[in-house]
Length: 536
Ligand code: G6Q
Image (tube, rainbow, N blue to C red; front, side):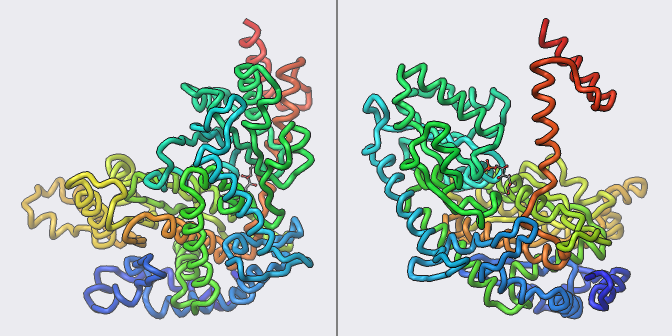
């Protein structure tokens, strides 16, 4: 068990003497440079973290003790590292070059990936050019992606992030929630003749997605007056050809992927079709290049300079040795407004686990609570707690030298705020400095900032498709590293099952009759209350 190794214990012992950022920076003028890395233009400045050279050595020793090198090789090779589902974990194959070959379970998965990418590109181009027309001959102007979780958050986040690159005549909307309002919102102002629905579901069994897809089909058929319209207005992204056919979508218009692509790791598979229609196949390919840049770095860089590995290890130090329960991601880019939500799923669904690969219970904390909002908005809301609250919150700031939409003067103000926050968190403001400003003694403690609050700065020229791909892959691999250290399976999600099963049972009770006596008294009372109110 990792927590009984000397490497873990040495780190635990260090928690009593956390480095002071103020001293670390004044004693060591090389520090900023030494803990800043550049991966093909993505600059990662980790120097404002609570680390020093000795600690980094101990973190690397922990990675060795956990077998990180071998685990990483096993993932890239296609071993069945998702042991509870007996599957390979090969999202990295989704961005391999066409000329590569990777045979897994007897199949060249890179060739399969490129067959689907070609099919997607051909379809996306036809929609973009207007060659693909709807049932009445009208071109498509609205695309509605219907999917949830891993079949929604990635393309939705990326569509917003890459807004500057989107086709001017095509809008993409995303419907995930089974709350009918969501579908309603996506269809406000939509012309059925110009609307294309993409039903995105790996399993094609997900309740929310099928309910939304059925309602969308009913809306379309009613408006266009024929079931035949479905063929021109519905395509599917799935691994379940039978389910797609049963729904009434021609499997010619299905874009496939494979069981070795986990839902939350699937945005660069066929699940990205809505994004590809929006930004075009070339931009999509640039995004894949960005993913690949980070994959290659993660696969080959020594741990001490390996950005996903180092950020993962620093996260373990915060979570396990220093006991920090959360991690904030604060993009200073409005275009990344859904990035924290995307990372929430990526990280929390992957590492929110309490048993190890062998089923035994872990004896330490695992995945942190991940959260965040774009800056500067957050500064006027929750940053108070990050600066002066009782629990330190490690932060990732994300910023770009150029905005995608230039508005005079705004960008300098945005970036000045970002840099100022990182500086204030790290170095705080001492009571002496507050007094020196003539602040009355009664207010000195209120106006004092403790500092030593850690952050990492992720910085690039601009938010291009390439950089977005790099950022996503960076977090994917960081999550992987932490899962390896903790000895858990980052690639299953049994925790979402129980609620799904119970919901199925309760739906019947809401519709057909009294609550099952097996429920607890509180749940039974809520079911009855709901039924009474609905019948009024
Ligand atoms: C992701 C999860 C989950 C999944 C959704 C949608 O890793 O498994 O978020 O993506 O439940 O599943 P389908 O794509 O099968 O509809």
